[in-house]
Amino acid sequence: MVVVKYSVNDVVISSVKFLSPFVKSQESFRIFIKMKIVLSRSCDAKFLSPKNADLLKKDVLDNIILNSVWAISGIKDYKEFVANKDKKKSGVIAVKTQKKGSKNVVEIVDDGCGIGEKDLNNVFIKGFSRRASKGFGLYLAKKTVEKLGGEISLKSEIGKFTKVKVII
Ligand SMILES: Nc1ncnc2c1ncn2[C@@H]1O[C@H](COP(=O)(O)OP(=O)(O)O)[C@@H](O)[C@H]1O
Ligand SMILES: [Mg+2]
Image (cartoon, rainbow, N blue to C red):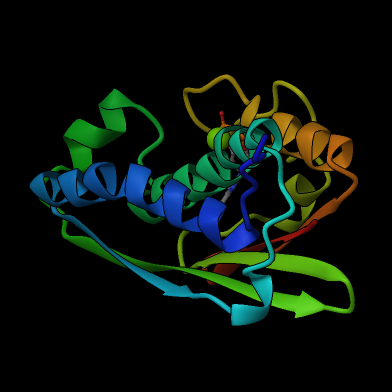
């Protein structure tokens, strides 16, 4: 029996393809987001089982990229959406893969609202959110990355950028 495996690049492509229509749909709210994808050939090795590839996509990459979309739109809730609906916003989400030793590194960088120093320590805590949301995304992402034997870290500067690094 042939067992199909997936590479980190496969998972990045599947997450970006899945979220592209949603990112595009933001344009009707005058939120223009450009996605830049740079994949290293060295991350083409197919080692992830279908189950682990699915976990990496849904729990980790989808959540991180969706956070970037939110960070660029900067809209916390419906009230703020109504107040800002005529303002044009734009931003970039860059997703890059590279190999470091035997590990695959996925970096997701956005130029959205960023995170202040005092909140940086809280982002992986279950239930922490700065918008009208559940605050489970990064908690789940961290749990899943660790289950897959990897690491996740986040760096940010308020008003400048947020970079999430996933090592797998
Ligand atoms: N790319 C990002 N830019 C700015 N803030 C972020 C970003 N990603 C996460 N955060 C902050 O971390 C919080 C927790 O993220 P998450 O666990 O995904 O919860 P949720 O998206 O439900 O709020 C977010 O509410 C937000 O304040
Ligand atoms: Mg989230």
